[in-house]
Structure formats: C-alpha cells, structure tokens
Length: 213
Image (tube, rainbow, N blue to C red; front, side, top):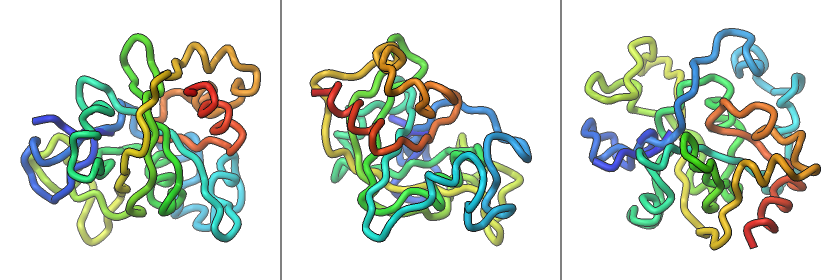
C-alpha cells in the first residue's frame, strides 16, 4: 500500500488522478475465504483465532503495527514531504490486512514503516495512526490503479487509515537483523511476510525500536 508519487496507497483526497492518490502497501495476494484469519463478517468480535490478540486492548492501550511500501512507489521520504507528514494508506486488497486497518488500528497506535521489495528490506521510520479506519474510495474509481469492480459503495469491502510520520530512523533495521534476533523469531513479520499490514506485540515493538537507536 502506499502513495503514488505522480499510493500504493494513500491519497488525501478522493481524487482519481495518480498524483493525488498515494499508493503504499507492497504487492500482496488477494485473500481467499479462510486464508490467514477470520473475516469481520465471520467473526465480528475477533474473539477467537490466531489474530484475536491483535484486536483486544485495555482502555487507553496503544497497540503496535507494521506497514509495508515499495520505496520506488512510495517511500518514507515521500511521506515526510506530504502536507503534515500525513497520508492515507489506501490500496490494501487483502482481507486480513483490511481487518487490521478497519478494526485493529486505533488513533495514536504506533506503526513501523517498512520498505519492501528492495535490497535490503528494512524498517526506516515510525508513524502514528492519525485517523481510524474509513472507506477506501479508490476501490470505486475506475481510473485508479486500486479499482475493484467487486467493491460497491453501498457495501464497501476495503478500508484505509491515515498515518502521520513521527520519526525517521538514523539506524534503519533490516529484515536480516530482525531474523537474527531470537526474541523476534515468532513475530508476524518473520512468520507471515506476505501481508502488507501486520500487528506487533509490545515486546517486539520495543526490541525493534531499541535496534533503531
């Protein structure tokens, strides 16, 4: 998912032009029923399943996430150049990732920004959720790269959030460094690399943040 320079993901206004709409998430396969996690329709309370922990929180608790973007499509530097250093994270077309955006992320949550499809793959900065999940209008725009003919305005399938950059890392953290950390071997980033939006535990977040200096 990310923003286009000219998305993958997130435009600030419902404009149809590529220049106005960011595109951020990395390419990810569309999820099929039963793949990776229960959908909100099947499990509205997320009470069960492997991802239940990602949706449960105490009052006022801040949760932690990671989003991926291909830097040649939308980089962290591109985000820093946006007005208010903020962009909408549009273009996610996977139900597991969609559920994280729509129902998991809350205002003020911390989000690592990860450059994917590059060598090395690396976490380069941090954001915060500036607006909670709302309908991704790019799914309805026939001229947009994220158009989805199966998505209807009266029954939208796809959602996005707004992210605001808070810190650019002076010591970016590579995927290889993460894989070498015993405390991160069970993280979703290591175990399920294909999703463009992933939850992190507080412990995983603190370990990575410490690695970034």
